[in-house]
Length: 110
Image (cartoon, rainbow, N blue to C red):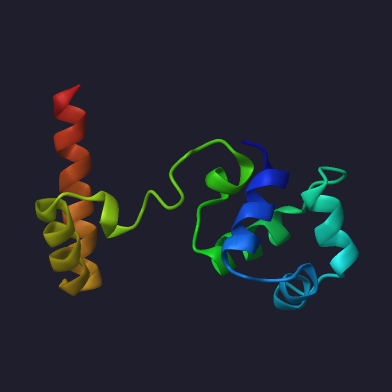
């Protein structure tokens, strides 16, 4: 699926008119129309605005991935989600230590 189709579907699913979407991302509605018709592509900054607004990845918007947001806990097992939530409660210093340890384990696994 291409960007034009993804943008159209996301906008429709959010019950937004082109003018409403344009306002939310500080564009003209004609730009939204051109994107949805595949006549032009957004800048990186605009692509990021769309991704943030619709809570999807830029890869999903571009049609590279079929998973809207691969980084949500919905895609994790209960154990993975628990690890992430506990990691977030750690101090920044301890998060760095955990990151270094994970990298060391991955290097040893190769």
